[in-house]
Image (cartoon, rainbow, N blue to C red):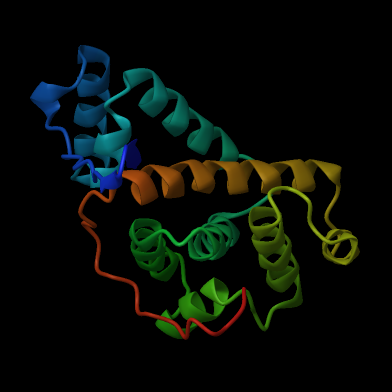
Length: 196
């Protein structure tokens, strides 16, 4: 944030702390407790979203609903990897590299997905369109939309893909603004000259 002050510009960088259970509203505390039981931790990003109990509850509900959509867990992780790369979110690149490997991708495949490519034609159509939707702010190239449909996807799948992009973009923006510590192993850097 820059503030204009007559002759000089002041740069102020706010520091965001990851809230503890005691620092969030009771509704968020219950969600923290459920996360602790389900996955053994409250990831820093979820805890940070928990500053707003409403945002955390609605975000996790939205994620859970999307798991019932057109894409399997592996395909969703591929989308999350490429969207996080386009949005420059180190936290989600790290988290979804870990989750992607848990869902069957190799380390090299997670890097390829972040670069916006896959050897699998179906997966390639998914991530190409997801990357384009993200980078173009929802105005992807018609060729990428048509290629998606040529892989057998329908209108429902297109809407589900847009929802996945929105899901991950919210998380990416939270981290990009707050820069809370990444509590997953860091994702390997990729060649920045590679266009997604």
